[in-house]
Amino acid sequence: MKELIGSPGTVSGLTLRVTQCAFAAASIALMVSASGFSTYTAFCYLIASMGLQLLWSFGLACLDVYALRRKRDLQNPVLVSLFVVGDWVTAMLSLAAACSSAGIIVLYARDLDFCKAQSHIPCRQFEISIILAFITWLLIAMSSHVMFWILASF
Image 1: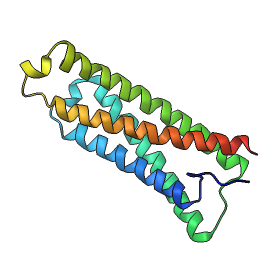
Image 2: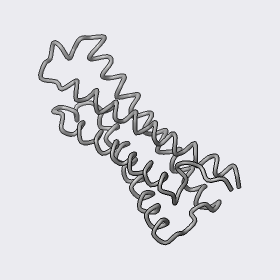
Image 3: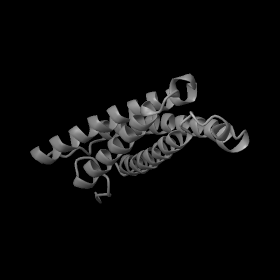
């Protein structure tokens, strides 16, 4: 079987998972450090979604480290099926959270000019957190695409 970039149990797979963790953690950190984020449901959903993504990616990164140290092959149909389902679920949740949060910030910053009128609201911090969430979604979409092709090759 041809080895794809980002496959489980490889250095590229580990790198992809660690990068997912880093961007999800950065998105959470920026959103939590912004004052008043908890008054917006979409921002709370973004934190919950990125938290789930962080846990999922960290767990799979630990599994990749184990496979690399023990020289184990993680490419069996049962494991890859689990990875596909988990990646697709977290990808959909991450995309939904990022899109809903982006909708709120576009409404406030661009349409209503609420961010200019209310200077105490950290709109720039919200925007950066949402951008990081979209980058996290892009990384998990890449991972889920690779897992799907591995599953299809069995």
